[in-house]
Every structure is written in structure tokens, then in C-alpha cells.
Image (cartoon, rainbow, N blue to C red; front, side, top):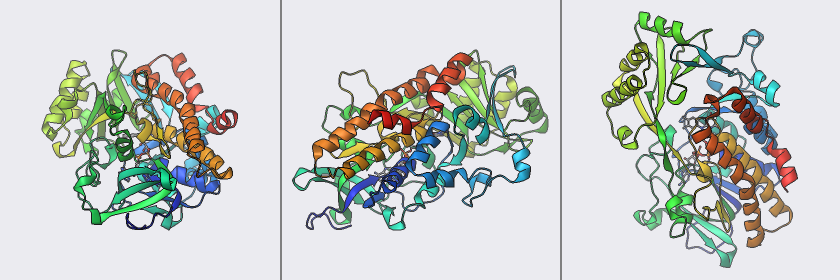
Length: 479
Ligand SMILES: Cc1cc2nc3c(=O)[nH]c(=O)nc-3n(C[C@H](O)[C@H](O)[C@H](O)COP(=O)(O)OP(=O)(O)OC[C@H]3O[C@@H](n4cnc5c(N)ncnc54)[C@H](O)[C@@H]3O)c2cc1C
């Protein structure tokens, strides 16, 4: 790191902005392929426990195995650990004999529509790779700790990116220790992580606090509210695609579980929780929204997340009481049974959360699509194509991006084309050509197709197309 006004020296072959799953996986993929002069910079003040749980699905795990086998092995070793704690280990003999927990989808009458295993083996048998539940933080930590400590830096918030053709590099500027507001688009940092802002405006930072790095390439994996995306789209035809769009569906829920009267708990358990699954999704009228996801880790303890087509303004800046009323009204309108309305009415106002879901559409209805790359800069993961989590593909698709980028950058390195901006642009365009159509399909399924809420045949085809996918084989035929 050196001040911006010193002699321009190229510090790194590759700089990665964002130490989320995609940035870190890309870094591991580059190192696996012999590219070691890299840096990952994240705005977080310090790496700490933030984030929701997520499911790594067969296509994402296949991508991870191809990116860096050690990362795949370490993450697989978290199976069976309470909360995927960081000690490694496999299920013990007793646990191995227990059936895997299930997630049921039922209608308001309590009739089961579908059931999904949350275990690894069942998915492995069907799709050649399993499914692993892991928290965002544990995933980040597993990946981060495989990189040398000096290669991942916290407290570096990217505020500016400039390509410098005269030096055949890209320069990125960072600030540290800035107090800034919350990020409405990143869903995992509501209470704990308050060091992000909504838009980038470098003029608000005193120059003395800015540090700069120069790299041959810059990979922007800085999430759905990507600063790099805003910077490279500014004053271009793509400026209106800088920020993500509300997808029309949001969530209201309780941030933890709470106790409800035993009689009500029993009524709910009897109607909806047959065979004791841990999680149940309830829908009505054959429609996918509103739907309520109920969790019940203990007999009378419940938590929930209600997904509905809430107008954006009905979610923002509402008190806990107001959110409870909005949720109960929504359930009433959709004829959800009284017992579900009561469960929601009993939520504690101080634990209420709301979460609008946003998207960067991979394909827009304009003749020219907003590019994911410009010269030496490329967008990856949520920064390129953030989407709501309805079919659990955000991180999995991001891992496919990481696999593609690592492979193509390795090719640039092998051919020693670091100074050839045309070759770099061609590689990034190849990445985009490979990834954009599939991500468009995934987003359509997330927002319109709703495979989990349609016919068995449609779900089977979707699963076959997405979960059986192997990015390694695709890269071999695409190269
Ligand atoms: C409730 C919920 C459930 C989900 N469930 C699933 C699931 O089951 N399966 C699945 O595949 N996906 C799921 N997702 C989506 C998944 O979490 C994201 O797709 C994934 O985290 C994207 O990874 P990323 O690395 O691209 O971005 P992020 O995870 O957003 O990481 C971006 C990183 O960049 C940093 N950053 C941001 N701005 C800057 C800046 N200016 N300078 C420096 N650093 C910066 C951030 O601090 C962060 O560390 C879910 C999402 C939500 C909200």
C-alpha cells in the first residue's frame, strides 16, 4: 500500500474488491492456478460474525471443488458440526444413522405438497454432489483462512477505480475508519455491520485518508450494492443500472424465535409439521406469495419469515408494531388460517425485521446490455447479477463466476498477456458470454418461473438443468 501520489508501481497482478464468498473463492482459484501476487480488500472494519445461513447446492459445490479442492474439503468437513462451527469433522456414528432434516412445503390445510432433504447424501445421489447448509460468516471464514493473512485486508472501502492505460494498470482508491450509514440492499448486516454506504461519493473523504493500489486487473466482488459497479457505470449509457432494483417481493419476519402458548403451538404443529421437519413453507391458492416460512427448533418456540408482494414503501422505516400489523393483514387477505395470524400477532416488536429483495437483472430490455467488464475491471457474483434468495442460487452462481474468472485469468497469466488490454477484455467478454445467459435463466426462475411452486415435471427439469451442472466440464468445452 502506498499513497496515491507516489511513483506508479504495479502492486499486484490482481486486486479483488470484496471478501465475500465470491471474492475469496476467486482469490483461491487464482492461487490454485499459480497466480500469487493478489490482494483482497474488504470494507468491513474487522471480520466478524454477520450474515444469514445459506445452502451450497450441487452446482455451487462442484464449482468450489474445481476452484480449490482444499476449500471444498474444508467446507465439506463442517457437515454435522453444530452451526457449522469451525472445527472440522464428520458426523459421528449415531448422527449418521439419523435421517437428514427435511423442509416441507404444505398448503394452508396442512396437506404436504413437497419435501426437501437438507442432508448432503440425498442430493449427492441425485445430482453427483451434495448440499451443505453453512452460515455466510462460516463460509467466509473457511475461505479466508486458506489465504495467507497478508493477502486479505479489512477496513479498506473502495471509493474510486480508474484505469490508467499509460501504466497498463487499474488504480483503486480506498478509505478506512469511515463512519457511514447502513446498506439497504445487503441483507445480512442490518444490526451489526454499519460500515457501508448507499452510494459512492469520493469527495466526502479527506484526501489524506485515501490509500491507493495499482493492479493489472481488478475483480469487483463487492456485493449487490457494488461501489465498483456504480463507479464504472457512472456517466455511461449504463448509469441507470448502477443500483439494484426492488424485485417486488419483500419479507417481514422475526429475527429470532419466541415462545407461544402451548395450545397454539400444538395446533400449528399438528396442522403443518407432520413428521417433525425443522422448517415448513406454507402457501395458499396455488400461488407462491404470500408464503410463510416457519421454523420451530423447540416445541413451543417459533420464528418465521413472511414473503409477500409488499409495496417497497410499506416496509421502509416502519416500527415493529407496524410490521406485525402489516404481516397479519397480509395473511388475513390471503385467507391464511387464524392460528398462523395469531402466531405472527404474538411476535415481539423489538425483534421484527423487514427485508426488501433486490436484483441486478442479468438481461434488461434494452438493445445494449450493461456490460460486466470494462477494460481491466470485471464484475462478479452479486455485483454483476445479485438476486433474491428464493431458489438459493445467489452464492452458487457466484461460485460459478469465480470458477470461470479464475480459469480465464490463468490463461492470461500463462500467455503472459498482462499488458495486453485487448486480450484481457476478450477474456472477460468470454466470461460474460458464458455466464450471462445462464444467470438470466436462473433469475427468470427466481422471479417468474418459481420452480418450487410449479409442477413436479417443471421442478424435475429445473433441478436437472441447474443442480446437475458442472462448471468444470462447461469451461473445458467453452474454451
Ligand atoms: C436471506 C438470504 C438467504 C440466502 N440464501 C442463499 C442460499 O441458500 N444459497 C445461495 O447460493 N445464496 C443465498 N443467498 C445469496 C448469497 O448470500 C449471495 O448471493 C452471496 O453472498 C453473494 O456473494 P458475493 O461475494 O458476490 O457478495 P457478498 O456476499 O455481498 O460480499 C460482498 C463483500 O464485499 C464487501 N464490500 C462491499 N462494498 C465494498 C467496498 N466498497 N469496498 C470494499 N469491500 C466492499 C462486503 O463487506 C462483503 O464482504 C442468500 C441471501 C440472503 C439475503
